[in-house]
Length: 286
Image (cartoon, rainbow, N blue to C red):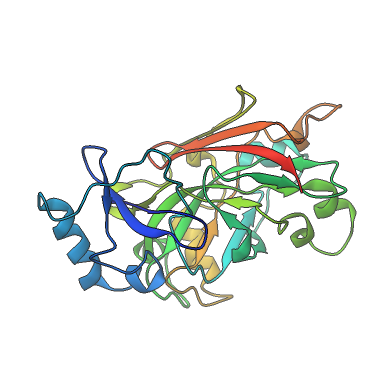
């Protein structure tokens, strides 16, 4: 299923994109798309049954309808740094022996076409297309990558916007360059795991002002999805509705020759993970 949330920010309602591409209202079946839904097999079964039964779910007119983040009440966002071989190479970093972790606050999440704000004082705002993993079952001390995949509810396109000076040059922690307002557009869809048979075979692409900047594949990940979930479960408990941003391929501004083409107000970024939907953001000054 392709689940999404539509409406004004803070007042989104649940919806579904059916097999014919028609937007369907789920608000008569479920209150929202969140961790509680993803952990409830019977509720998900009701949604599937309704989606497969003609006439049950009302159609929505998408014209002028904002698409919000596809997941509400996100618990935590765990991010994996330097998780692609080609990205490590372009930045001159050694391939990590273990996953590099940092966090983004849930309040960085916006819809896939919402405005992204360039922080005040920023000189190095950068782009990163990523595969986002959404947890559907509580995970703690998992024993294998196969178990890790079994705890995934679905996948989404994510944009891990980053301010490199804040992240790298201001000392302390990467989090300073990762948690600025609007720095995690998510969606448009949460695609359930049954529709993604191999999360290590997904092309990722990103364009800036129409120019292709990133063109990679999750096949190049250093730590694949199942292993990432297993690994994280030994350091923290993952709950339904938690999100994992799994890293970005080569092609970020930081990896380009000088003068590096960092983002500025007026730029337009478009990105997609194949099968998970496309995003478009115009940048403005905060």
